Length: 315
Image (cartoon, rainbow, N blue to C red; front, top):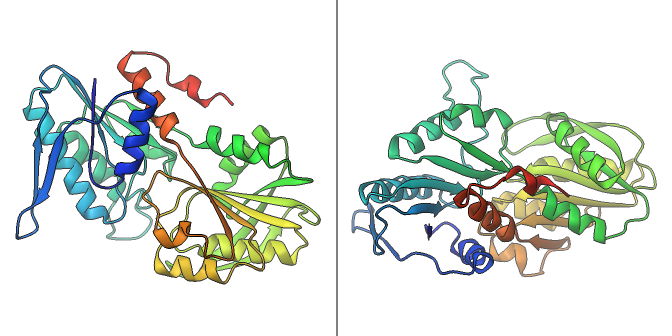
């Protein structure tokens, strides 16, 4: 087995190797003067079980192309098996044709990964479960819930209540409510645009509760902040948001700067290389970063040894 990392989230890959007790494989990634990507695998990979760690984030177009070129380089180096490890699967929001003349970009990315030569995909908390069906190769879909639930249990909240910030995440929120042994509420919202959300009602009683909002990702924090505001108006004592992926934009950081009066804490994982201004402690909202490196590293070990991966979902 040998693990290589692209440039999207090198610290996460290094933490994964700490769990596995080894070193990352040697790879050279650079840009030509015109911006084209050049990849060279330094280590011998003939007959090896190769894992390529690369979330599609930060500069998603660059990182996706970098991953595809890495896969091609490894395939031409005669690796026995190639597993693309995507802690964050970019383009997952475009998973269906809900308007005329729009792409299904999540399917396109799946096609590209397979065409490049990937034999298997390992990913975490897809934006839509059906994306697994876009692949004709095995997909191991991990969840960050073991890491998030463990932390949330340690908080020992007085009257915890899990809330879905929109109706689309109700099923995921229900799963967390069962794991934490709490009730469930849902915020109904109306999206006005890509970055604007108007939350308008709460289904369930949140008065006097320590609310935990569950979501798979947040970019502009529009949904989370709108939901937190209306939950506070309905009498919630404290409001936390637990999110797996946080590819935050400048607009998202602006909203977090204004959210101190109704959002207590933002809990995120390190699937994405987080912005420095998010983790510097200068926000009015407390930010807690949890690492999923151990979970991903253990999944890699089990895939290599042909062991069960589904048992990682046990809490």
